[in-house]
Image (cartoon, rainbow, N blue to C red; front, side, top):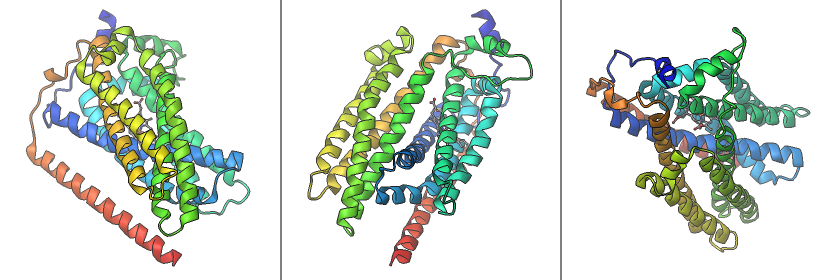
Length: 371
Ligand code: HEM
């Protein structure tokens, strides 16, 4: 333990520009935004790849996903930047060593993002007749890699006892490390992977319900397919979630089954909401007017994501308290710069306003070009 503690760098002498609680709130809000868009992007890619391989995807569903992917990919990346900044400001002493240790695996994220994004555009442009399937499968694999690299960095930052071991494991100069000895790594990846498929399915179902108003057959097809993906992935994810929880040490998982009130409420409250979402989505398939039911399922799942993200933030605190007890956020010097904070919040809200306006313009342009 002594050696581990000495590996964690000391706090930056520069004080934090805002109180820790405010930075945590902003970190949380921006992370939830990122993860919803990431789910649509990664889940949409998995669905498209499945469609290309099986040749069994309905064309309207394929067109809808291809239509939104370039937009959500851009938003996934931009909404990732804000939580990355908060992560570095709050947990830099843990995060930077982890990112440095996995080195090339971390650096490759940028290359994977660039190539993956390019592949999505190439696929959406309809130009690559022969290579289309391979291009989108390639982009899917690259983005799955990005998610996996994040899982590695996030798990390694809270297990500093492994840093020295990993540093020594490879000959100097190679430094392509993964945190594969971490037993929660693959369950964590599986949990995010299935969650992404479920969200992409449900958002497609919502689009299907909207489309039913003008194109009943097509809308119904998209709704049915979206609901099936959502329910199928969520049911399997109950197993994924259990695996993820119980591969943690006993002291940690116990917090989520009664040991810590907030952790327990957030996790199991989110699970109950996801069950409600399944019920709403299931009923929507046979309903004359599926819109209210699909909307209820979407709201339930949005709240599920908020609850699960809260549980994930508590998980990080518990792991840090256990494996890096000397790392104490309350000891970091704080010197609030309220002007800058206000500017951030104003620009953040203005940014969201601009995005909503852009989406409305995009919708209007699509309606005009279809007419
Ligand atoms: C489009 C590709 C991307 C995918 C598939 C993706 C996927 C993920 C996943 C699965 C996680 C959860 C990791 C975990 O908890 O183990 C995550 C977290 C995160 N992502 Fe992304 N991501 C993408 C792009 C980005 C980009 C471009 C950035 C930043 C510029 C970013 C910033 C973050 C941050 C900071 C976290 C962790 C937040 C925290 O620890 O609370 N992501 N991402």
